[in-house]
Amino acid sequence: MMRLVVIESPYAGDVERNLAYLRAAMRHCLTLGDAPYASHALYTQPGVLDDAVPEQRAKGIEAGFEWGDMAHATVVYGDLGVTPGMEQGIARAHSKGRPVLFRSLPGWAE
Image (cartoon, rainbow, N blue to C red; front, side, top):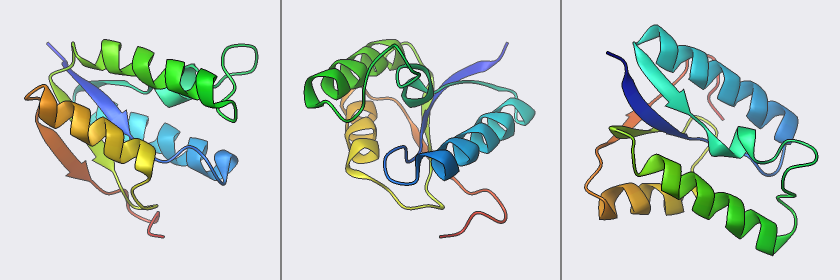
């Protein structure tokens, strides 16, 4: 059985680079036997929610938290830094008693 994990990684800023990093993080999770979930890749797709609109961003974060509450762990990929949004996800995991793991990907250091 695969372990359900929430990925915390940067999104805003250099979105193209950050999504490439997230794809690498998802691949890394899968190679380790985890089943990753990344709401920031799902809800920010065109036509879903606009991360630049505060109300929509808040709705996406809350929806991600609800799904994340079913996860076994939160995995933080911090090679590109830890953003305020990631800090929210880490705090949520701690408040729910979910383990928080920190991982790195070779070649992605900031």
